[in-house]
Length: 309
Image (cartoon, rainbow, N blue to C red; front, side):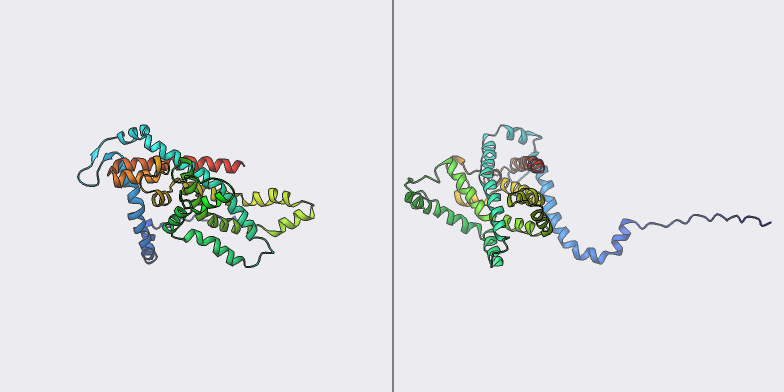
């Protein structure tokens, strides 16, 4: 009778896992090549963020010693009427610019995506040129178009029997002018993004819908819009963030004062004035962090609303 063989237990083998630093040193050549980006990002990206948080708890004129004041800058911010006027102006310009801009961008994208359209590449280039045009040149042109006395817009209104409008002397019309500049500059940019989203939708979905008897309206609302939802969400969030930080348009068009009654004073322009004109860098830092919170909360609300739509 054969006896069963007993296997001899072998001692466990432990593999020493290399440390993180050992792995970095092993691939040091690769890290050396990408290090310039991280060094510049640390100096011009991370450091200003941390330093602005530090400054927001101090009084500092840009020279001399910094005085610790705790939460005083934030307490003053809550009662600062100028800041809340800037918040209201920013939201007003966002409302007047974002909704028509995204709508026209979607319409342009659909037109560019038509199979019968010839010269599509040329149209794409023409619509995108507005985004890379110098904002200073754009502001000068729009100032001429919306001039109170000899502007092109007032001339066109006179042709249809409407009197001249004081574009630069009205609190509401100033926002309309700034919103028009934003729309003109970014509608082509968003149209190109929508066009890329439209071209990524599989054609088999449209063919299946046509075979099932769906009409164009049903195809649009039940296939195109649901498939474009991630793209729409992206453009809404990016537009919201960009509109909340609008600075160059009102600053060049109206100057640092924001125009008549400060109607064009946005949050970023207000922060710039407090820091670089009034030399209150501590308070300007507090304004920047308040902007960060407002933008984060507002973007989160937009994200939730678009997801549920």
